[in-house]
Every structure is written in structure tokens, then in C-alpha cells.
Image (cartoon, rainbow, N blue to C red; front, top):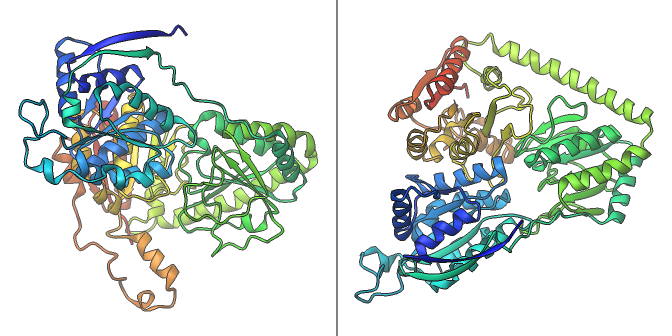
Length: 573
């Protein structure tokens, strides 16, 4: 690619920042923009120039989660604007989610002006600009961003942005934070020289040590009951394909642990199923070799007995998860690299060492186990179909009827992937393991913006819906023409909290109480009325027989009328 130097003149640093983001491949700035960037966007719009697309989000959490969803669907980072310290505080939960999910984004935050002098453009002239100044604005996010910096001089802006992008996209990836005082943004900038495209390219393929690959492959090939456990491998189609290949190469079972992506087709012969939240799976205790691949928590030591003799291979771009304060899982072999490189390297070796008879016997065992589990699950769903109320399993069964090749499913906790089974790469997105509630709806909007021809369905619990700043999300869906279908599994409270109390105190007073304190909501909220206020389709369902017809009508509205929709399902607790 031919590289050239451009010398550009800008009315303001804000205008330079708008143009630099565009030149560096950023399509969106979610959340709004500081004053001088707004002026620049207005100028470019009046001159019919191609520009950054700004999305106004009434709440900052919406902005951060939209950038999260957009990157997850495209692997292309976007920009977020947070207003000063108070906007940063509002967006912090989303930043924590992005950090733990290793989602890069460029966060730009306004800072109180430095100057108080008359005649300085952007100098302090609003009461809040004194109280909103902090001694160290980035301190509140520093633990959860990879890098932060304050632009102090106009001529720094290009170098700061290029540095932000290269750090955000270096593995392990994550958010970065830039603060800019208002008077610096308003300053003129003449004769700025930049390279186009950027010479700060840093996207190497991380390749594991061949000797470590040999050692890991030997462990897997000689194992009697090897298991692969993963959470985030499926962020790319190449990773997903390579995982399937390694599974078949050795007949190795694959377990998905609170999956953030669709890591393996649910129909793959080696798929062992899922564990969510505090669930466990017997395959891990029976394993003699475990490959933990892009998996922060492969098992719970407090609940799963992994024998000391079990060999553990940890693999991924940062297999030891160095950003986590404590993570105490053994590692006999470490494979540092991109997942598809690791998996294909292992598959090349394992398929030469595992006899066909062993491979076939394992595949037959997986098939028999799957048939038994599927039969039991089908029977449970059948029994629930005879109930007068709506169970979570029956709601999942109805939701499954909507999922086809055009659907992308976003799940903030209620979806049972044994029942609802998105098939393709990029067809499923789950929440960050940080657990910052309120991510799902806005992430779905970001995915819809990235994939306008797809049908995006977002499943949330009623607690997640409360946390999502739903007025903000519905406003963005309406104003940006992002018609997602939101399905609320409304059980009237905090079901996961209830289960956590019972897990911690199984024989305590809460277990004997008719209702566990502080786990239920006092009202039966009409969430469907909220979406109607923004021109969308809303419905509440209490009758099991009306659930599927209502979901299908909501889906029709989304696809044919291009309006957002919400179905509020009354789930039996």
C-alpha cells in the first residue's frame, strides 16, 4: 500500500480529531461529542463531506456497550464520548465489561478547561467546570483501561490518537482513555502532518513456541479422556473452525464455559455442552488432560474436584490472564498465541498421533451422551408445555423457533443454549464475565449498527432490563433506525442472587423462608409500554399458548415494518 504524508489545516483540534478518527477507520462515535467536535461535524455536514457518524445516547452506558457490540461483531474498534468525570462515572460499568472481555475502543472524554482567561476559546464559563475538575480524571478508569493520556498541546492530537489505537489493538486488546480539556479542543491547529495510512501498524500474528505445541499435542494424544474448555474462542470464524478441527482430530470433547461467543457449532460431534454461572459438568472431573483455551475460569475449585494427576494446558493470547488479581489454576504447558494458530498447530500434530479407532470410539461416546441428554431435555420441555404458567424452559423453546440463519442472538443471561442453538460463527454474543448488568440491549444496538441486514434478538432478564437504561436504548433504536427485538424473561426479581444465597447458605434461614429477602421486585412492570412510547411494538405474555404467536408477530414487525419490538414474558419464578 502506498503511504503518503498529508499536511492539514484545521479550525480547531476538535475538527482534527474528527478527521483523524475517520482516517484511522473509525466509523462511529457513540455517546455524542465535545463542543468543538460538534462544530466540526456540523461543518462537514454543511459541506457534504464524508464524516464520522455520531450517535447521541441519552446515557453513557449505552454508548460504551454499543461500541462493545460493534467490535464484537466486526473486530473493528469504535470511538466513545463520555462527558467529563460524571459521564466517565456513568460509563464505568461498561468500561469494566469491555476490559474483562478484551474489547478495544477509543474513549474520548471532555475535561474541564485549563484556562480561565477572557478571550481564550473554550475557557471556563460554566459553573460546573470547577466542580467537575479532578486531580486525576483518568484515575477512576485506570485499572480497567490499557492506557490513558491527556492531550495537553494541539500538535499532540495525531500522535496521541495513533498511540491509543496501537495500544488498544495490541494483544490482549482492550479500551483506552483520552481526556481533552475544552480549551485545547477549541484551539486552532495549522500545518498538522500525518501519515496516511498510519505507520503505526501493529497487528502481528502471535505464534506459540513449537516445542510447547509438541508437548501439548503429546499430552492430548496420549490422554484417555481429554477435554477442551473455552469461553471466548469463537470471536472469529477462523478460531471456531480450527477448534472444530482439533476436536475431530482427536475425538476431543469441547465444553463451553459461560460462552461469550458461539465457540463451536452445537451440532458438532465433539460438543459436550455448556456450563453457565455456577454450574458444573462431570466431564472435567473425569478428564486426565484439560486444554483451557481462551478461558478465564475453566472450573470452580470450590465445587469441582480436579485430580492432582490431571495435566492442564492453558492457551490463548494471554492464557494466564495477568490482569486478574487472583487466578489459581495449574498450568503444565502454556501456549501463547492466537487461538486459530494454536488450534491448527495442535490439530496437525494430534491427528497423526491418535489412532482412528480411539478417535471413533470417543465420537461414539459423545454421540451417546448427547442423545441421552437431549432426550431428557426434550421430556422436560414437553412437561412444561402442559403447565398453565410459562417456565424458563418453555420460553426458551419458543425463542428457539425464531432463530434462523439471519438471526444474531444477544444474551444477557436468560437463554438456555441447550434449547436455543444459534448455529453459525458470529450468531451469538454473551455478556462479559465482569457481570456489569445492563450490557445486552445496547450491545445489540451496536451489533445491529454493524450488521444492518441481520435480525438482532436480545434476550434479557427483568433485572438486566432495569439496568440497561431502557429509555436510552429505546431512544437510540428509534432515532438511528436500529429495529432490534428485545425479549424480557420477567421473573419478577433477582433469580441469580436467590440461587447465590442458597448456594452459600443451603441450610440457612433464607432457604426456609417463603421468599428470600431483597430478591423480588414489588411491581409487575409493564415493560412493553416503554417501547410503545418510542413507536415500537410491545406485548406482555402470560399464556404459554400465546407466547410463540406473539414472538412471531414481534419478529414480523422488526423485519417487515423495521420497528423495534419488545415482548415481556411473565416467567414463573
